[in-house]
Image (cartoon, rainbow, N blue to C red; front, side):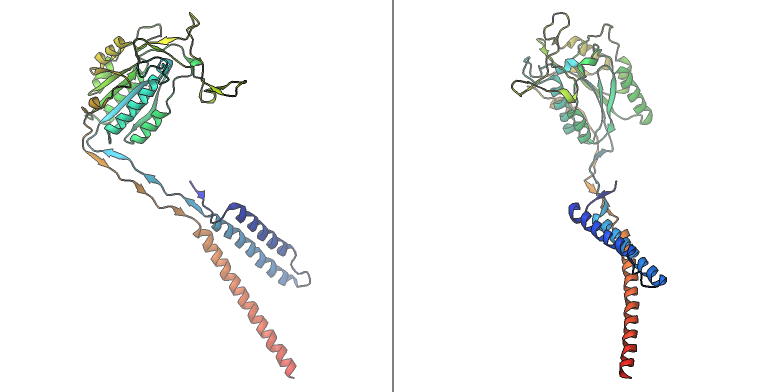
Length: 361
């Protein structure tokens, strides 16, 4: 994309260009009426070329350019593909990441820390991020750019409370099966692992489906569980535009209200369901690990081998400049102006010689 990189502030360049353009336009219109038609046409043409020169000079000063591009992406030649499925239902906003309800740190905060740990511990692996609540979305297609994965994870939020209709832990099965099957078809034999991050809470009325069909496409992974047996309450989420309310009396921002239990009218409490999470782990053929703020997943991640990694160092493409195009045209006009001035000087000298001869007579 072409951008402008002006050599001087626009507040200076634009008025100066406008002033010069207005002056040249006036000279075109006000060509000396006492001259012959041919002379007036020549004068207007000269001033028209000067107007073009003013506009070209403005373009040169604005300096259109395609900025330099910086790319730094690690790539792996042996390879490991890491697929991460994250529960973003309202229950993941429960404030018991550190095992104590109401401390403000949510389960989703813990998820973000663990995803960042994956990117740090497995540089060069290919990562894909999939989230699920009432629908399943692939947020990050398979990429070896760990920074992109972390950036996408950092902006994850719970689903909008108004749209919540109950959660089902098997929601991502369909998309995961499709994505993994396509990856296997495209690159058979590639090692793939799956991490399922959630709290196991099943609030949908139907029994959850099985993850058995996914097991054939993966070579390992883990199910990570978030939450506590005591459970915790969850804040409402209405979207980015209305996360904080302002108290009309104090003018201070207030956090969103807690989600209420429709049966009791009291703040609803979400509890981890480790039986469901262990069942998912068994169906996938991977281990289950309960997560909390007092532990890390370093030892878990240390078991996975990315393989031979080729790191591409940061490379910067040169900026593409375009000022030389109008500058070349400007140089041509300047040459024509010099030729015109040379001709005018020749005519002036001839006239002076003629006048001198007349005086000598």
